[in-house]
Amino acid sequence: MPAQRRGAWSPEDIRGAMRLYAVTDDAWLDGRTLTACVREALEGGATCVQLRQKGAPSASVALAARALAPACREFGVPLLVDDDVEAARAAGVDGVHVGQSDAACAEARAALGEDAIIGVSVQTVEQARAAEAAGADYLGVGAVVDTSTKPEAWVVSLEEFRAIAAAVDIPVVAIGGLNAATVPLLADYDVDGAAVVSAIFAADDIAGATHELSRIIGETLG
Image (tube, rainbow, N blue to C red; front, side, top):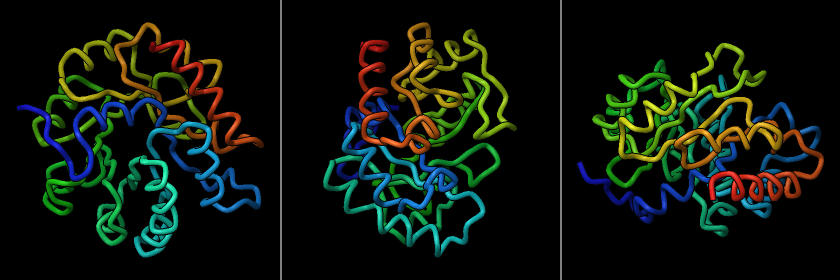
């Protein structure tokens, strides 16, 4: 099935947005506001922002998403909500990212409509093919490196990652344990970009850290 346009975002836009995919984590705010931290990441070159607030009420997640939306629009970057389809719908953001144990891709599409960008976390070829068939616009694959952010995530081997990327036509973003030291490992992967959490939001200089990651990704992926 040919890739579809999602509202303002063409398939090419969505693929480009995977380049440096910033995933928020309130644990690293250290007295800073989430809005300020996300703006710094955007200034540093983040190409997509995922709001991740595990366990927070939908109303709270929607409120945070609304606060981030103006900066993401200003920089022309998609804003997605992790897991919470209801919060994504209430906030009117660009889409949602769901996992294997979260709302199914098809359910998210039904709730958010054809204009929404929907990403799905996968670890196997079977999961990847099922997500694409259900209408996913991109896949998050990992963990590619052991990570403290999601210690329950298993590491996807290089062989399995390559098999996943070869099995689908939609973009694939690597996630899990990626930072300035580990992003160069992606040179061996068939991948459209890197999803990064603490290497951005735990940094004292978020804009500088994001800019450096953007540089390394450019050198690694071309």
